[in-house]
Image 1 (cartoon, rainbow, N blue to C red):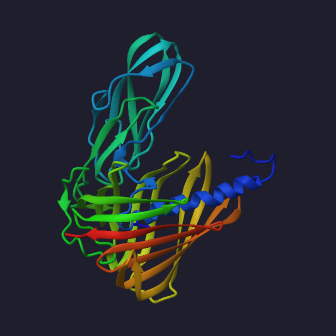
Image 2: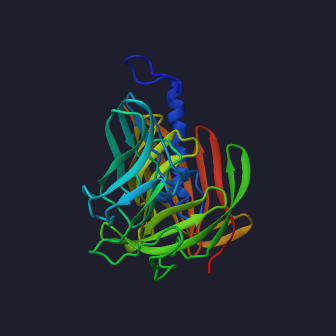
Image 3: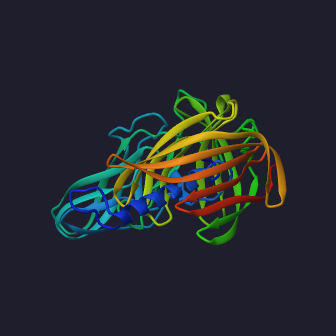
Length: 374
């Protein structure tokens, strides 16, 4: 939601008990990450196309990708949201070959696109490699890519396509400033807003201050989303996308990667809140993720538990609060594993004021201490 918190398998049978426990714990990390997107929380997960997406290398040759970030690649072609890449979308990089043989170089996927090349090195020394682009950009913005695990990172600027009037804002603003930053009443998205939150995670308590650096309108799939670029002072800029048409709060984030690097999701799209429905309304989201190379499906069953209630958080009483309960289940190899329950509290005109997560007998929370919305 928007407020943004191996044992080896036995042969021929499912997974060990320890694996089950690990899989029960990890969906909570995914849940916290989505929660953070719904109200100015920081990232237990990095939801950001522009932070860079690492790739991989392979083959029999031994080589090194040379050059420093920002000056190691020559980019060709135009990049537009919702327009598939063609043969003209390439990136030239330089490698130094120590021993000849085959090679494979690829970037990770960011904003729905990636770059790769393969072939054979017939000689040693410095050589130029052309990475070919593939995929279709999903949204406008600035997205970083890293070939292999090198120190070379290059940026691709994706502009809005000709069929929409969305902005093209990058991390420093730009694009079309959102016309009404308080239109999503239960998650305001005003540029310059600050939120101070208290994290109680794994027995450790800390405070984090998140600032909305820029908020611009952009188009995704024909709908207008608010692109929110925020910074918690710890993890760099984080981008997320919010649409609240008809009182349905839909969040999109790309290339989610856990802090430990063990879990990832290419794209997350989730309905975190519905405001024009009665108590008891339920809906379900399914999100595919990869944990240490194992693909699982996390199911989030949302239930409206309270509407117009009062809630006191960090000594402050908020009125007109909506409470949403989320039950998380992880499915792997046909087995459904209960993975935790979360309670979210959204205050009108403020955002998410508290998140409580219970998993395997332990409880973590994120609470709002103070805020400023221009």
